[in-house]
Length: 99
Image (tube, rainbow, N blue to C red; front, side, top):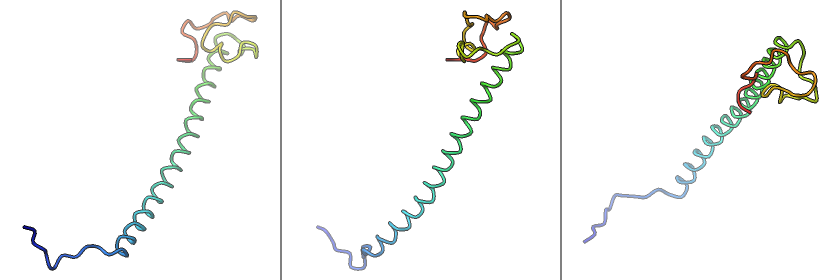
């Protein structure tokens, strides 16, 4: 029923180990590059968020003549503050999108 192939050989343990070592080296190189790119993207995202806050604060200042107070905080860029000093020309849409 089953015929035995005479000239077919399997891979030896040494050959399998060499392939595993090569694959591990390739995975290590790729993994290191992916992780470094991930770290760079986190830094870039933070810089973009800080730029958005800076722009929103500048727009608030241009409209109202002053920055939000410490008491009002950055929430003043999303909703109109009710505490003193109340902004005179607050944008109806706020200065930042989202919460």
